Image (cartoon, rainbow, N blue to C red; front, side):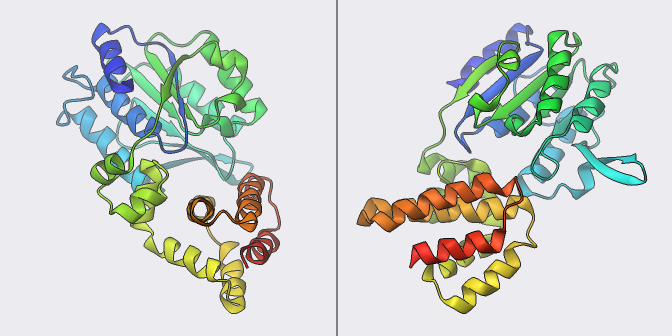
Length: 305
């Protein structure tokens, strides 16, 4: 339904300056944001893109790298006081950028830089597109900086924000964006779209991104299963490894554990699974605040016993 509506929007050529795609984790928001951007930027003016013009090829390249987690070549940094600060992702397309959290947050420096980008004339396509993924991760300063742009957006620029926490977005930003709700994917749809087996599709929780990450990082699933076996030496080893992982990998580990424990709770109805789920969710929320990760993992191990 979302894509049918968005396609009609593309065909009218009356595309809003700001859109907000919201829904539960992995409901296809970000995937659709890339596809929608492709259509907006397409040189042949084909809804969802023709796939073969220079614009579509450049968007496809960044999209593929994004969902595989292979974005090192697309990161843009800005020097500040001798240090490099992550700003946004940009491939060969001069009119398309993607903002993702730098660490756990989207910082004001990122929004300031993309604001400069927004006011430059398009070089390849007739418009420019800026995707802000996980928009709820914006700091208050970043959100307020974005708000100023959305109040008077450039006529040739479209902002597409995605979030699974609509309640965390400033009400003033909500009022200045056209909102589209995403309902999510079934197990069968995840299997077909992400080309994964049934086990991964079920563990994805309907998330295409999670399914693809799991397919590319199958060791994560094995590590979660080992952790839940609760052998002290394996738990200790994993606690040491966990601290060194990238935030995306840490998050994936906890999401898969949450899904497995949820399945066990459905099957066995044990109180300790309920407590374990609560702790996993608190741990996930605490990652952004720099909690003591080994201590939390040991707490999870005790509750899983």
